Image (spheres, rainbow, N blue to C red):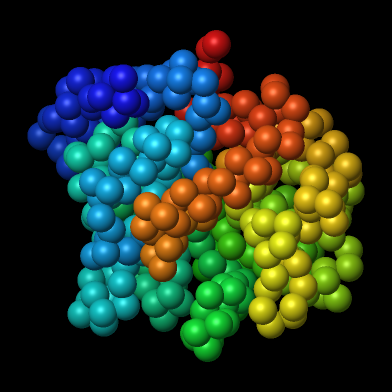
Length: 349
């Protein structure tokens, strides 16, 4: 029996109660059984379930039925799929997208409610207004996770090739907006994600913010993704081990380029965990094995790569990485660590 058919009955039952009666807010206690059933069904089928902690989409372009079917095919149990408000809607004054309610209503067992992505243009043009919206919706709508906030972001490889320079984002993480976001996360206990390029000059401010807000649960996206090696001479597995040891509030997601992925501007392989023969470097593997609960599986699906074929390609890349980890570590990184971070529980079995 196909995965979708195996759990379709539960999905239909949960769909009607994704939001509490009389309220427009997510009810995570109602959603969790659906997530668990998908995880169990994928495991029973002989595949490693994946809980994708970090992906985003353009709400006006997502083919939701096809995307959900592709998740079943690829063994993606749950996705934290964050809406990125398109620029034309932001220009019309629509700074926040409520499209997550559509996702949960249609497929409550596949998607985790997650706040909007803090990216261009809603975040970069008016960061304080975006934080106003973020704080209100995260609390009122009961999101269990905030989206990915871009503090320092180079244009992606695809944007470089398209000569799109607008995504060269520079918002100081220790500036007013950074302090506001970290403080909000510390007060609420709700995790948030950051895109923060790995550069020597940027590492001390992050360290300082993690120290100042130890109750803020931070997910640093893109493990060891270094665009310019000359600008990140102090970053390596030993550095990250020390940072994770000193800051229990820090987690790292594992979305990064494959062994042969080249950043087009620097012409360097920017997935620094890989060896020349396509394995995980011994120092990185040891770090992940020693601290597996601090690492989270992630696909980093985005608005310009949200088709079924993209999902297949990105999942293959993530599984290439996971397959090189020991079985116990692999299970934790693939889905168990996300569950523990978000819900404060461990999954039985």
